[in-house]
Length: 370
Image (tube, rainbow, N blue to C red; front, side, top):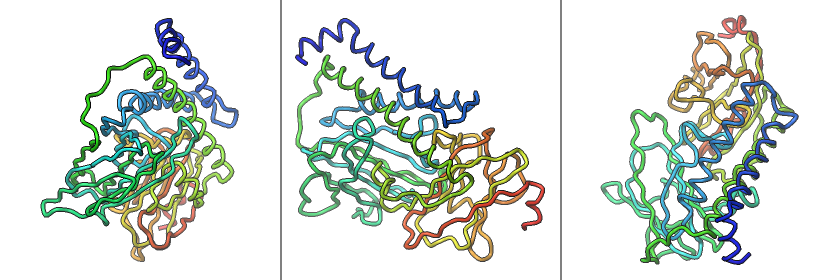
């Protein structure tokens, strides 16, 4: 399509109409036959699409220029994707693998910190393949905790480096807290090294491309994780190991071993998630999500427990209890008004993952298990 044709479509409103039509089609993912059809789940589903749209507009419009990158958060308290970790601060920047970049900042005291470059995207092929990676254990730091990381195709003569491929288009940073109240996150900035020009004003071609990618991101992301949730229903109230290769193909951290499952409980039931011996690891947590794989509202409900907040038994094992009402036992997780949903366990940096066991019991029998 020529520049003149694109400008005509922007001026006529056709670009906007196409964008709105694709957003409308995204609603089909919320109406899928296997998904719960109650008003609560449907309401959260349509809200989920609005959250995906906010993320998509940041990613593909407001922060889309790889020549002048900046960090934004692609998952947070009110915008969530694919079992977003409540203990994480996620930061994301758009890149062009043909160029070179520098991330600079201070380490802070956050428990876990990693940087991964990626190619692909949910808006295109539904995958985000890692092209380079470094975590805080590998970082060379100055005495004051400051550091720089170079992102490039070829390694620098010295210092921290994350590899880029020609097709690399993004950097994802994960900062993982054991205790947000006491830990200081890393302070980061990113810049392109081989450019001194000024950003160009928005033009019709960029708007058309950005809106098209944003709409595709919403539709494809909603479809991807609705497919995952559908698959988990085959093992209701179980928590089997996830397909680790699949998790990595959609942007997972290579230091993490993931478990995903589906839960559904009656008002008088509890789901027990038990690990005989918690493995030695940098971090672990278990979180409760809604059907759309959004973490439940951790601002107001206890829906996640981790290495710091969970209470282990004398043998170094742990029992987590998910139920609608507080059973008066350690390690209770709230359903937060939900009858069903998904859940996720992750071991970070474990040399050998330990698989959890799950079982459903009646609430009034819980005291007998102590």
